Length: 301
Image 1 (cartoon, rainbow, N blue to C red):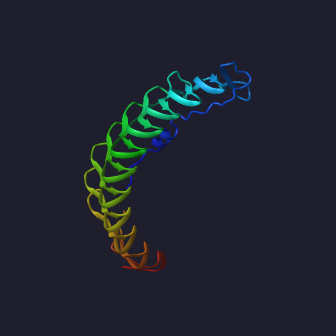
Image 2: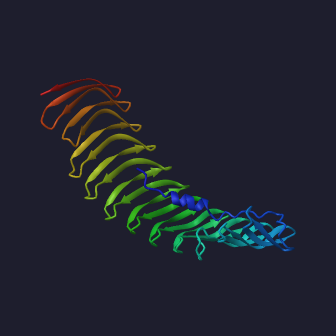
Image 3: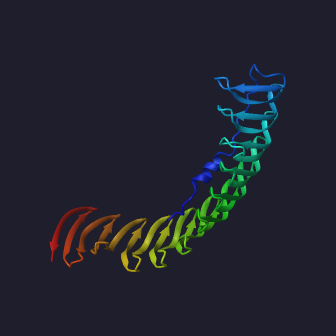
């Protein structure tokens, strides 16, 4: 079972203040040391200083509505020092970070439109490297961990939007590794098991919020193997059988919500041979399957 991961993390990092290069030859409206670049419709797009036709010094970029979108400094055409970006028409910049040699380097901060912190991370030559923290729009911390050369590494912790602990475990080179645990908002354990190279391995257990086991079994290379057992919230077994490479095989027993009990075998993940269904009223039905397809049935009392 995979913990819920955050596509927002990838989106934030992918959008790390990409600064557009400034044309080396300013438009005809530029003065000796000042350049102005316009949209095709005449609105101001960017303005700043140049030396020998190359951006050098402070530059500002604008949206078509006239609002500021980015601002920072170039040295010989390369972004250097602090840069800010405005993703919304607000006074506070939504992304703030420093550049070295044209790449984000040092502490980088993302903000929500209302100026609350959204995420912060250390970047080295444009790559996340160091502590990462992310918050929701209400200001609650929802994840914390570290990056090593652009990949999640070491211990990570996740919280839900209400601030309740939801998952914890470790990463190695961006892949889940070792023991991971997830929790319900109440603090009761939801699941526990291990990963190896990003895939489930060994024994895993899932629980209901009342503390009773819901499901247990084992994984090998991310696929179910061995005996798997499912239970209802009262602790009664509802399904049990063997898995091979993620597919049910051999005899399985399944107790359905309608009170019926099904007993039969699987082959290559498909029902095969004779299955016996015992209904809640005691009546039985014999069903013959061929690779998952029902080919005959007979009701008995």
